[in-house]
Image (cartoon, rainbow, N blue to C red; front, side, top):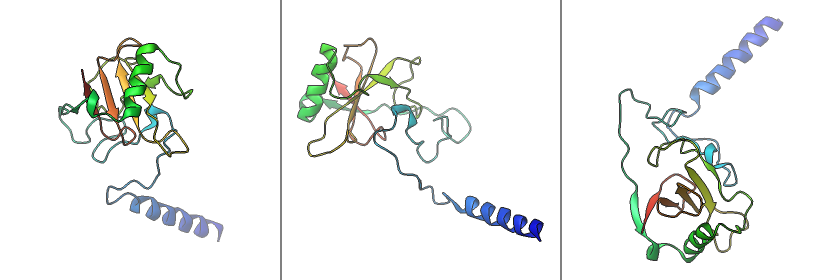
Length: 156
């Protein structure tokens, strides 16, 4: 009796798990305050952030945005990055791993993420600036308004 019940549970669990994510949607919600390296992989990508299909596939370069086109809060974040802080959130300046490979590939430790304040938001919101290279340098920076799902290169 116990074996039959256990077997039924295993079959039911298998059916539930195999039915999850069939349409490519993600059932888990992403916490905006999660670490930058914990961004969920995009559909069509393996967990490592590489394309799921076999063979080499090159990423396209992110679209560009000028500093004048950025929201005022993003311009303020760039100013704070150049000054070396102080930053409004303890998480500012954390390592950004680029695990989804949406930005150009560089060695680990090259990119760092900073919060861009969102007016009216009670938490850090979804907007960030990710800069590469030495701290206080803003020549290789990217803006995202959708929590690392897409980026725009900030043109000098």
